[in-house]
Structures are given as structure tokens and as C-alpha cells.
Amino acid sequence: DSLEDINTDIITLPRFIIETQQNVKDAKGDFTLVLNALGFAFKFISQTIRKAELINLVGITGNTNSTGDEQKKLDVLGDEIFINAMKGSGIVKILVSEEQEDLIIFHHNDSKYAICCDPIDGSSNLDAGVSVGTICSIFRILPGSSGTTKDILRQGTEMVAACYAMYGASTHLMLTLGNGVNGFTLDNTLGEFILVHPDLRIPSQKSIYSINEGNTFFWSQTIIDFIEKLKRPEDNANDKPYSARYIGSMVADIHRTFLYGGLFAYPADTKNTHGKLRLLYEAFPMAMLIEQAGGKAVNDKGERILDLIPTHIHDKSSVWMGSCDDVDKYLKHINKL
Ligand code: AHG
Ligand code: MN
Ligand code: MN
Ligand code: MN
Image (tube, rainbow, N blue to C red; front, side, top):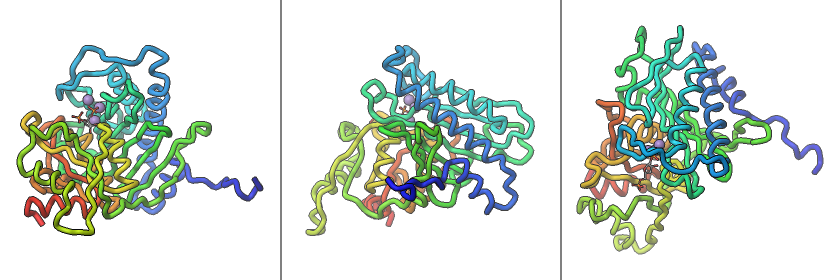
């Protein structure tokens, strides 16, 4: 390799935040602290997952969380890592976590942010070494608030940022500050997230559907018909049948959707009458990221996910998200387009 081939001018996450904030009026650098704390939590969780099998961290705890999920040891440890990282940032006032019944309030002067997180998404896949992740939505707390549920039971459009980390063959970070999506990959030797997908756009169409088809028996006829239609594209001779891809980790299924395109869905069914995925820390942040990359995110009724308002911190929603044309196909099927 000649010396010129080595890029010494790489964009790390801190550099990206500093350069982005220069264009934002009134930015005081406080958001840099939030991103620092998030980056630290993602690195810590990533390292813990990578050695879990070797240090007796596989398996379940025997407890159940407030949405009825069995808790894995890593769900609990990931939650602890995340909570302590946010506490240590000094800038986060409220934290909602999938693994905590109630919201947590930190008493720091000047703390301005509320973060909702799914510390380990896809935890049923953990012990098989399949990709899992961490998902976060970020709100700025209401002016003068001392930290209540009012700061987070808000329309999805009020998020100021959203991101997820995926712990796969590499550790990836996808981030939106409401102005497009940027994708980073962790360089383990530097301990830094490096910008590799500036202004990532989701392909407008791809014939891939990602849904737990084992639930067919519990679906409404409308959904059964739609998925059947994707497999038998009779209406258009050029249309090829959709391929099925379902990992069962939302982060991994959404990460593939970002890069390849397609449709990811978790509809309501007779077992999960409001869907399975939780609004504040699964549906909202992914919907913001997908929209910011040019895709669409709606619920079973065709309502925009980001227009919904949760009434409880662990509220759930049905979701259909991904490439614009593929979500539109669903909207046409339910006569909402
Ligand atoms: P979590 O592991 O955070 O509880 O989330 C699980 C979610 C999500 O990752 C995935 O899309 C979905 O549950 C999978 O559900 P099924 O196993 O019912 O398909
Ligand atoms: Mn869970
Ligand atoms: Mn999850
Ligand atoms: Mn989880």
C-alpha cells in the first residue's frame, strides 16, 4: 500500500456531531454529551455480548418484564449498562427502558433529554449468536419540566433524534438527528464509530418481505391475503414473487431493509391485539430512521407511526415499514392509497 491509500481524515462519531452542530442554531454542545454516552453504552454492550458465552452470561433469569417477555441475563445486564451510561452523562433526565416497569428520573441540574431504549433487541436470538441490537429514541424534555411521563407520551414527530446499534459481524450505528440518516461502523482497534454510510437512502423498492409467517393462523384475512399476493404477483407479469427474509431481531431485519430495501412488518393478531413491538423504543425510533432515509412507516390501519401518541410508556403498535413502494403496496391493499 502506498501512503496515499491510507485515509487519515476519517469522520468519527464525535467529529460528525461537532461538525453537524456547527450548522445548528443555539446548539450548545449538550447533544455531544448525549451521543458520547450512547456511544459508550453501545461499545460496552457490544463487548459484553461478544464474550457472553465464555463468562456464563447465556440463558434466562427466570423473570418476566412488564410487556410479558422472558428476561435473558443479557437483557438485565444490557439494561444496567445502559442506565449507568445515561446516569453518568449528566445530561439525561428521563430514561424509559423495556426492562424497567417505570420511568427512571435522574436528578442532575441542566439535564435536558429523555431517552427511551430497548437495551437488547432480538434477545431470543442471543444464545444462537445471531445479530441483536440496542434501539433508542431521544426527546428534549418540555420547558421547565422536572421530568414526568408528559415528556415522553408525545407524538413521534417530537423526537429530536433516534438511533440503533447492531451487534453483528461488526458493530453498526445508524443515527438520525432529523436531517437524514448516517451509518457508522465501530473500529474496534480505535474504539470509535466511523462514518461509512453518509446520508443513507433506503432503496425505493425491493421484493423482500420480512414477517413472522408462523403467525398466519392468528392474522386477519386482510393480512393473509396481502402476504399471499406478494407470493403470487398475478397483477403484473414483470413482477417477481417476493423473497422471505425474517431474522426475528427487529434491528437486524431493519438493518437489512435499510441496505437492500423491502418490507418489514409485525401486524396485530389474535395473540397480540395491538401488535408486538413497543412504540417508544421500537416502532418510533425505527419509523423516524426509516422516514429520514426516504422510506415509510405505518400501522395496520395505514396511519403514520410518527403521528401516534402513546398513552402508556410500554404501549405497542402494529408496524409496516421499509421501502416506499412496498409500503404503498400495503396501503393500496387496504384502500388507504
Ligand atoms: P426484544 O428482544 O427487545 O423483546 O424484541 C423482540 C422483538 C423484535 O426484535 C422482533 O422483531 C420480534 O420481537 C420478534 O418476534 P417473534 O419472535 O414473535 O417473531
Ligand atoms: Mn424483550
Ligand atoms: Mn426489541
Ligand atoms: Mn429488548
